[in-house]
Length: 493
Image (cartoon, rainbow, N blue to C red; front, side):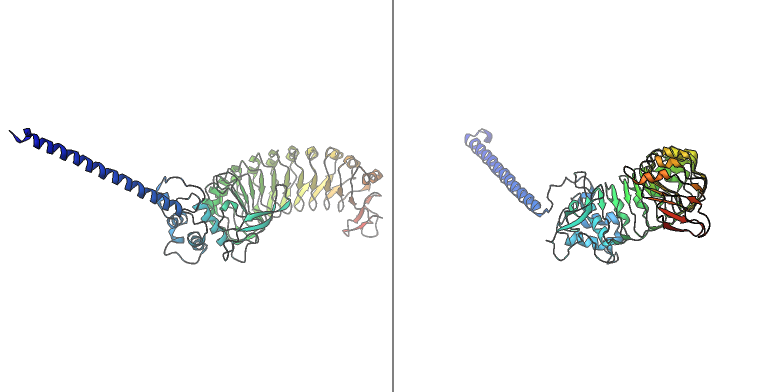
């Protein structure tokens, strides 16, 4: 018969087929188990090599596949940290630290490489002369990670607390001066006050992804204000006062429309305040004091409807106080003293019914106090000394029921000192000397030194004029009498 009909042949063929199937199955099983075993070993090795506390997210872009060095190069530029970059610099010092010295040794897929590197860059940039005062790194002992420092609460009260040292192996959110209030371990606040910081701030701080607050109060930082800070879309608070910054305010700062507080006081800044200040519509606090800013106070400041605290004092501002100041109806504090302001006090100040502290002393202001001035019902401290104000002090002063200090020394006020001042139950100081007041001060003022009143100092020109002439003012109840010609004062016996 044909071969395919041969019974023996068919039996051998079936057996061969079964054997072949068994061989294939065995091979497949072996490969599967071997692959699973190798996969398990790979996962174990990979997990063991990680040195971060929590698992990291899966790669989502090419950036995650780059090494730590490459990420830093992309962050600040190959020219600063690449193979041919100059050394040593703060940029390369920070790179060497995060690659070789950082006890945490972040892996390339950590989302915190950027902020950890930038904080290291901040340290190496702003540690030019000497060691930071609070919680500086201890490069000789990585186990010395804890420190104690004095900090301030929201009311300005000091207290001691424990922190991790800067550049220690702890998470950067635990470092002194660094805060991550969002609960996601991303840095939102850097506050390093009175910390012996010298050198400059790196502009790359603007690359912090969600940074909201920069506070470096009372240090010795130098250099100019970086325009990059104006592009930080999350930034709401800049506190750079009492440093040594120079140059002008970058135009980009006026685009930071989320800023709530901008404090540049106590530096060496120059130039003018731009009319573009109107763009900072979220500002509650604006402080430019103790610099050498010049030019007029821009009228556009009136557009800052939420502004409550502002200090322009001790600069070279000239021109008149803009009438638009009256649009700032939320103002509580207004400091304009020690400038070169001229002209009258605008009547629109009467709209500032929440204003408590009003300082315009040491300018070249003229004219009488407008009647609207007496509508400032919250006014507590009024300092207008060393100007050229004239006219009388109105009996409407009785409306200033919260007034504690009336400091109007060295002007050209005339008439008598109004007895309505006695109706101000909170008054503690009246400095009315070195003016052209005349007449007799009511003896009822003597009652203000007794409870429940609080008057402690009352100065008038009640000394003999030019040592021998009659006093300009007769005042039995004044604590101190002055000679307007000789400009000397004595305790009134």
